[in-house]
Amino acid sequence: MKAWSLAIGGLAALLMTAGCEVGPKYQKPTAQAPAQWSVQGPWQAAAPSDSLPKGTWWSLFNTTELNSLEQQAVTANQSLEAARDRLNQARAFARVQSSRLFPQTNVGPSAERQLYSGNRPTLGSPILPSADTEYTYAIPFNINYEVDLFGAVRRNLESANAQLQASAADLENVRLVMTSELAADYFSLRELDTEIGVVRQALEFQQKDYDLVVRREQGGVASGLDVSQQATVLDATRAQLELLREQRAQYLHAIAVLVGQPASTFQLAEHPLDTAPPVIPTGVPSDVLQRRPDIATAERQMASANAQVGVAKAAFYPVISLFGTGGASSRDIASLISAPSAIWALGGQAVQPLFNGGRNRANLAGAKANYDQTVANYRQNVLVAFQQVEDALSNLNTLQSAAASQEKAVDDAQRALNIANNRYVGGITTYLDVVTAEETLLSNQRLMTQIRGQQMVNSVYLAKALGGGWNADALRDFEVHPKAIQVVQP
Image (tube, rainbow, N blue to C red; front, side):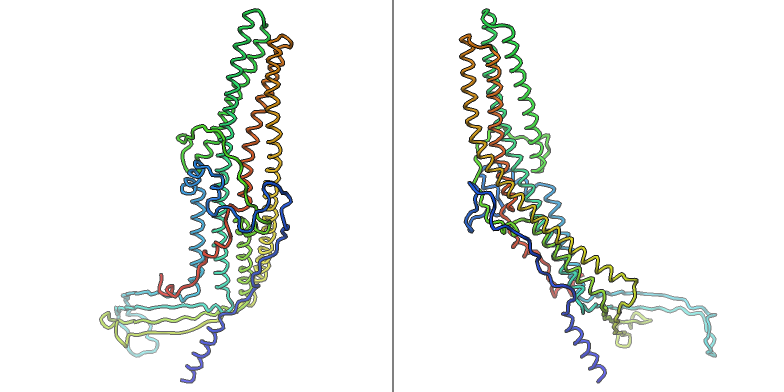
């Protein structure tokens, strides 16, 4: 009785010490962040309470058609669906790791009929053996439990949970990349619609000028050279229109794929770009560390790698296993469920690694190197994030100045064309001046629409660089915790 008491007490003490975990405690590495963005102006930092709309950042552009397309994409985009599947896979793997904290139990019913040889050895018995057939029935229950004395199992679960959260952040990053790509393609499409309208309008005026020159040539006022020059401009503008239509088709097909529809059947009616760039709240640079899902992915990968260092360290310590067997065994199935047929066994095992050719030491070195690699990747991602925000802010400021100058250039080109036409009709200059003025006006009008389109696209990229309204606090919901019900789950 005393021996049993000592054994039970020792087992209880062993289980109570199972809270020990070897390996470094995770601490988020620092990343250098500037106090403010270097570019100021219309896109200056907003008040602390301002932020992009959560979940539907694209609503900031106040475009009904874009909102509808984004909702379709969130529902039907296949890359996003694959990211959801990866998240579910990571959740399942974390559950697998949590199962190792519980005893593993199984039952193995068996029935056996065996013929014993009549010529088997007697082992010194004076009684000669005879052929005999025997039956054996058994219902054994087995239980095995690895005592997580040094935290290897818990470190694996910690690593799996970090990977689960990394997958959740990766899902958000895929969503952000996909929705921002859709928004950029949409505004590029609408810019092309505007540019196509500009070229069509230019064609109408150029056609009228061509008809005028033809009449003047027929009246003996203009020469065939004037007609040829205007015909050249007209044909070149028609070629530009066809190329713009081809570019539009490419963007239309790209949008179709993003919203999960076949490119051959997807259509969007032409509509000019009539949206102005919104003022996007940028916050301060340190906010980016919390709002960018790709940075959150890199940070969670660091946490997972840190836990794996603990797993590698735990391999240097003993592995304690407890096991037990119970059930019934009998030669007669009728007496299988009876007290004399009961069987049981209890035991334990401790395995202490001694010499394995330096494998554990190498695994630990590899785990530490992997952690250092994730730290470097994290800090690189942070630097790239700051760069992308600064690039977007700088581009928007530059494009705003360029748009103001280009509006003046269009007005100047229009006046130059009017003057050239009047001087030609008055016989002061050749028709070459008119041709040059027409080409200059069209070129400046197209550039004006392109700048406006770039403003919208760069506004999208700024929203993307800022994280699209997402926040890393959402990752707290993605974690697997061991539950007592798992004891009886298959």
